[in-house]
Amino acid sequence: MSVEIKTIGILTSGGDAPGMNAAVRAAARTAIYKGMRVFGIRRGYAGLLANDMFEMNIRSVSEILHRGGTVLYTARSHEFNSREGVQKAKEVCVRNGIDGLVCIGGDGTFRGARDLCNSGIPCVGVPGTIDNDIACSDYTIGFDTAVNTAVEMIDKLRDTIQSHARCSVVEVMGHEAGYMAQAIGVASGALMTLVPEVKYDLDRDVVERILYTQRSGKSHFIIVMAEGCGSSQDVADFISTRTGIETRVTVLGHVQRGGIPTVRDRVMATEMGARAVELLEKGNGARVVAYKHGEIMDFDIDEALSMKKSLDLSVFEMTKMISL
Image 1 (cartoon, rainbow, N blue to C red):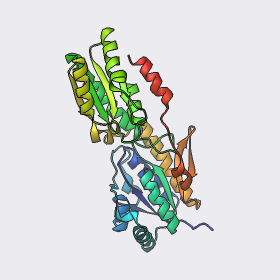
Image 2: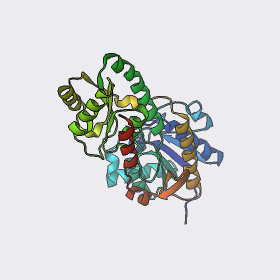
Image 3: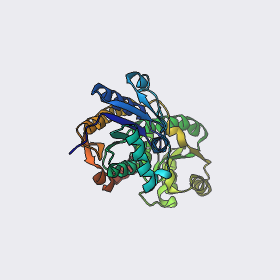
Image 4: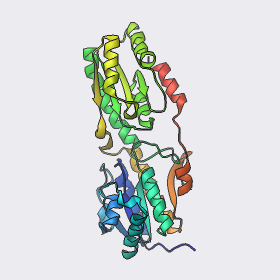
């Protein structure tokens, strides 16, 4: 028998992503519209354990739709990753009368939500991560903004490397997944994109391509490299030594996480945040909201966490053909 949801909590956890505020806004206002009480939980699961929360009303989320980051703040919690931590979090929910949670974040956030579900607190996950590496969803909140930010930076960088006939190795985020790097490489016209999923040989895949395009008349080069592919400085030094071309490194770093969310991220986040509350209202906890096959849907949280996602290598190969 499902539990009647009268009060919900909303939290953001893990890395921040542009569009998280739109999801918070949508979840809060959908719940209030449906007659629920809403608590905003600061600093993710760490804040839940510390009982760091406040009651929200419709004005609590005014003027946040266009803001980057997360107004609820975010953090990682080692304490929560224990059985005792989960039990403590459940007790905090019970003391505050919280019947269910909307948990916005990535796989780590969803694993925490699953643990809380198993302890008796219904939770619905919303995919918010710039890496776009949630297997059950074709799209995650923040990806579009992050990629656009990186491409804008590379467009500016191109002006100076063209002026000086240089090569630039641009390091972007992506420890284990190359979705961001691949999209950035395609959109910026990079000569080569290095991703963790594909083994590469610097001589064959980078140096030979630079020399080939140089013979055809090109004098400046952009290499996009996911941070999980090794040392960008080592790659730059190798290129410089083998080609004689002045090669510099630009690490975009956390600038990719910030900024005003794009229209796509605002719309996706709004739809996903509203769907999460609708699921809780119907007594459907232990779910993850997802964008799949062109529509918003949801999956069982265990099923979602067991799924695997792979890079579209056809796009990778296509890019190699047209980027010379």
